[in-house]
Image 1 (spheres, one colour):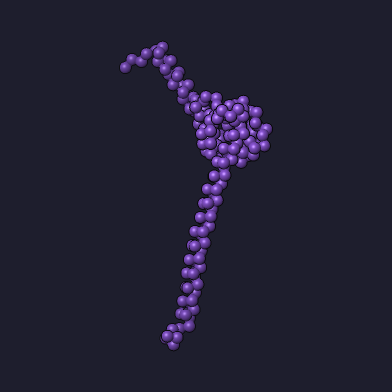
Image 2 (cartoon, helix red, strand yellow):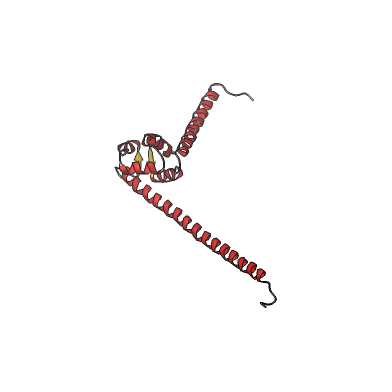
Length: 160
């Protein structure tokens, strides 16, 4: 067989084998790295949820399962709250707006579900906080406009 194959073709075949081997090793390495990164993101999410639960316990000073605006104000200087706000890129001065944003049902208190889901949505740059605040204000304006339209309709009935 060695007498019938050119040495150049043997070199080309060897280079082909090396190239394919490197390509397969690159794909396998990529799969391992992607799996490790995915697990790292999942671990970070689990860690964040546990931290949020702990923070909720700290903020809920009276233990009623709700955080009031007063309770939040009392803990603004807390290192744990400051660390959390820094982690989600929110300044302490924006914490008052954060309370309004997390209080989705506008009852003046934040329960554990509102706190957890709201904080998880706010991860990322502070721009997401601004967008959420705008959405909240828009919803409030829509409610006010509906009340105004109802009052106006009571005063001036529409004729069709």
